[in-house]
Amino acid sequence: MRVLVIEDEVRLAGMVAQALRENAGYAVDVAADGEQGLFLAQEASPDGGGSYDLMVLDLMLPRLGGEQVLRRYRATGGRTPVLVLTARDDKACVVALLNAGADDFLSKPFDMGELLARAKALVRRGKDQANPLLRIADLEVDSGRREVRRGGRAIALAPMEYRVLEYLAHREGAVVSKTELLEHLYDYNWERFSNVIEVYISGLRRKLDEGCEGKLIHTLRGQGYALRSEAPKA
Image 1: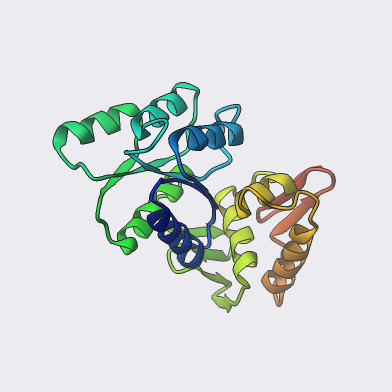
Image 2: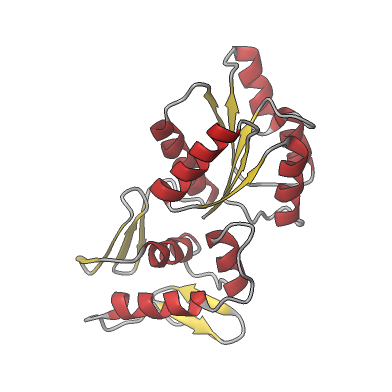
């Protein structure tokens, strides 16, 4: 999953980004002002589809305020869930944020654990997955605990292997291109010609299919990968 944090307080932005990377396994981009943040958000989603799975947006920003960023982003069709950070918690402010298109808000100062919980919930909601437990055939992916089982057997995955599998699980049945996987798994400076995805897919197949009859991760040559119980038609 890929998150955009728009926050001008350098220390806070660093803490939020670190928490999202280390505790949720997300790739994180950070913008220090509203204009840069809006540019990154719109560049990532020129058609409104959204390469980011979540936006964490401070309300008080230089160059362009958080509420303006939110309204302009929504006006162009941006659909990424937005969690607003604000020092104000009065009713009028909350109503204005929700009307502008915010999905949730946190009042400063906040507990980092609560931010992580709300961030994960918004990512699941954005993927139409209210339940943290994802099931595909006999495979279970617990996005809350970041645990994987197949046929009741616990499977130990490397952090990046888990992130690849979780993303495919959220897109169950859909064909996901290598580029889409890279965009959601790495930050803005990812290496566009890397072959790491093939390595992770190979490792996942070996671990998921061990002792099982059916394969779950399928390759469509020239298109990408699909996680489903039956092989997709070419």
